[in-house]
Amino acid sequence: MIADLFLIIAFSGAMIATVVYFTEDLLDPITIFTLLNSTRFLMRPAVIMLGIDLPENMHLFRMDVQELARETMLIFFLGYLSFALGYGLANGRLSRRLATYLMGYRPSIIRVARLNLLTLIVVTLSGVMSAYYIITLGGLGNYMTEARLGLFAGTAYLQHLPELAVFIAALALYIAFGRRRGFLIPALAFFFSLVFLFMMGERGGIISAFLFLAVLYHFGVRRLTVWNYLAFGLVLSLLLAGLGMARKEIMKSDEGTTVSTSRMLEVIGDDEQWSALSVLQHLNANATDHFMVIVQDFDITNYTYGDDFYRGLIGVIPRAIWPDKPERITTGQWFTERYFPGKPSGRPITTVGIYYLNFGYVGVFLGMLISGAFCRILWHYLKGVNYRPWPVILYLTFMFRILSWGTLTPTLPMDLILVFMPIYLAYHLTTTRAAVPSRAGGAGPALSMAPQKR
Image (tube, rainbow, N blue to C red; front, side, top):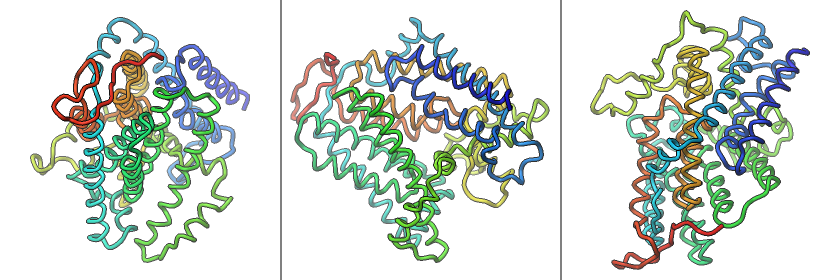
């Protein structure tokens, strides 16, 4: 017990010291990485080590779970220190030079009329897609269930339409606030894109959308205080948990159970649902539990030695071109097939878990080292463009949607195509490279993206 407490204190101290040493802003990568991963890296294994809670699916464990939690936390500790090392080392001329090659580094002008038009088009396409599947599948509950069971296999680009809509709608809404006019279209687009995301059972995109608005406000209007962020983080955590509960209730209709609005509100309002441990689970901290199973069952004798990265790479090839492409692409799918045969959906094991599964401790060290260096390049990029709106969107897209909370994943090639490429296209459709705002060519109102005095 004393050793466990010492480990928890040491890890907590390392996180605090790292944030204090490196932090330049509440939204720099090292702060985001530490705050978001603290639930998986520190809190979840700590409550198991101290005997406060047990991991999910106890039938999978043959060893003492407290011992496994201790080893799991040590692996996370190694990964965290490696990330911090990579972040610290990538503070030189080379990383700053690499940052200049990212999208939007040169000043451009946002064509507001084009942005609003594109937002309307993407939101409309998302609505048509949602209506089609709801009608075809016989109800919202069926749609939400099937969306999580491979409904978009082979057409993954459709799955990302509402997400693209909410991202550009957040940008359009932010610009409307800055200009103090033109709120209606962006606000409606933002609202409906959130609805379409929830219909798909997608909570991550909803949370990202609110984060995008808050961060745009932080960098473009007024700096938020640490208390603002603590309050905002608490609200988002509760929202994430509440949406998870609501999603489960709606999906019951797939089993022939009628779910009323009052029943959903009753479940969400149930005090027993809102314990600290329950909220921790709804924040996907149970990925730590899954990783503990990997720590128990895998060592140097049976690591997968890059198979997950290979599958992530071939995932970019459409099945229309390669009909016999392996069905299983993600590690979460593999975990479910191995430990829950016949069950739907995938169960994540954290990116650190993927590094460990493929290459052991060496993989954890190198993977997190490179991840830290990449995040430092992103931060040099954001500072170099002086926090202009579109670069903020790109930065947040990488930090929250393409990376796994700051770490490079095996599915990065697919995410670049499905998430980044639409953002890249939207950027070029809605901006014009110029030094000063203009209305050349009748393109409509423009908003300068040139650096502003802070």
